[in-house]
Image 1 (cartoon, rainbow, N blue to C red):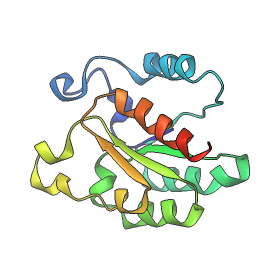
Image 2 (cartoon, one colour):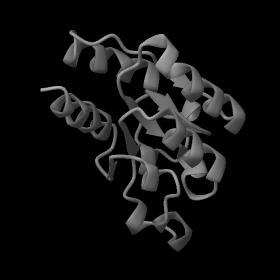
Image 3 (tube, one colour):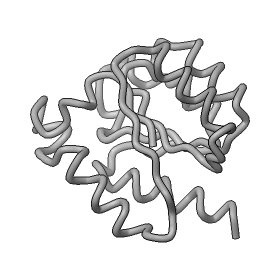
Length: 138
């Protein structure tokens, strides 16, 4: 589970959009909900670090990726290329509904390289993304 820029401030920034729960507390919910899965959680505000983490994922036995690229969704050809290059099934998640926000958020370069996208369901979108990935392994 990879989170991009500014998501380290979840629970503190723009709570009317992103809510008041932090990712640290939400990680426990994810682990409890999917106790049969071993998760890696990663967050960076640096585009290159996100790309490097993705590049390492196949060598570490990762079978699927849930990613919230934050603002990089709309701007990062390099991150989109990394998602495509690693060849792992990837689901993009956005906490807010991108289509109910500013027009520049309506296009996702990274989402175009994913098997699916979920937006607007708050943190529950991450749970939906994991469930979606699990359907690929049945």
